[in-house]
Length: 626
Image 1 (cartoon, helix red, strand yellow):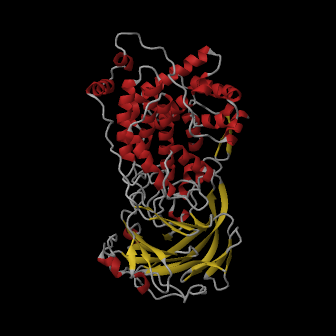
Image 2 (cartoon, helix red, strand yellow):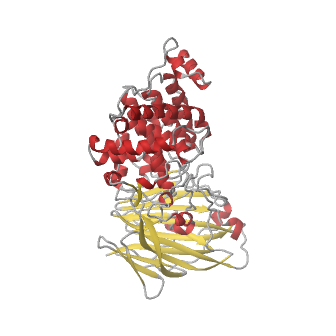
């Protein structure tokens, strides 16, 4: 394979490489002979090895399970509207509503949130909401995170985790009774209130079936009858409306509810066959070739995995094997998610997600039964991962998701996160997906902006337009990425990432190109941000720029006397130095969403100034001292 085998750079892109002279960097460490020019003209970057793409994964066959002619006929008839009871047993009365098995919940909830429920409150991302004040009918809109928890009945897992069943079942039944009183019958179409989105209805049906003992074990026969009727009504509503889902991820949730009902409700075989075919087809639309969901959000990845884990538990309850395609897809989904973990085991903050807690993530992965390593080079999902001893680098090297996939779409192209020995040093703010808990809703759009990510911003403008309701507009349409290992006498091994995006080309005539080089010992990260004329010839005038480095929680920072650098004291006692080769270095306040989606104050280093429309380059260094 040739050295440039993975590069898609144009001739103009190559011609712009290495603009500007070398800059003085931080004092060299032992064995280091000085500053490194990170541009492509550095002779030490030439003799390298192009890294092969991340290990190939066997793609799932996104076709309905192989079944006989009789079952195909059943599936077709059910899809055309013939009742399941007629198809399953045409010569007897429809079976009475009941559950065919008890499901063992594979995903424990939050004991803290469950305790809050027993005390009379929903606890969502740190914010308490009294149960007595919740409008279950949806006339008074709730914040988006609370709305999802309430109407998907995700809170059942939390309640189950907080105490024995006999203690928590009465609480579950009271909330269930209040919800049913406010929602006696499904509407004709989706969208008639937050309870009746396809995503909430599908997830709710699945949660009702997985946690049935909490809502069906009481002595009140009338309540039990209402719950069983609601299970049947919701399943029939999903049968008719799953194709009207608000997005493709919501459709997956709807199909999971249908399949679970087909497994656990009487006369369900036709519904199960119908649901399995629809679910596998929907997964094929939402999961990319490398296993990443097309929303590019870890939250979406977690949601799909969680749905499939609980659905598999429904199969186990009735002693039935799920279709092989579902197991294959599960194996596809886990490695990309692990690619966005840091040394502390928690997630990076990408596409609206927060730094999801390591214990929660580990429990989810354990529940899948998938044993694998993180992907380092997730091309289609768009994230690059470099591990260098105790250092972990994550790099967003792709355009934002398409508008039809985005729920919390962020303008984060060419942003990075960096941690060492489990301590986050450079982060993104994250948290758009949990805005409405303790993270204020008014910050949601700001958290999705380019400035909320550790990358370069021109003129305080987003590289991709941020729209309402989590959607995104025009901007970055193309990203070029080149990854290779470096060898040589002066640099004792490193990984070099080079990428560029065109998000600022139409407005400012400039392409942003970023080069990151992480030494193999994980103690030195060198970067260079270049602005290259998009048409080959620069325009007149200047434009303001800011390169932002949001610093991790617990990092104490102080500026150097010359205004060109800063010292970073980490909680583990280590000390890092930051140096910039251009612009003015300042410290500003910032915010970061922690492992539970709660806001934490942090600081950010900002390298700012004016740059010519003809282009420019700005090198910087982050180095562990001592």
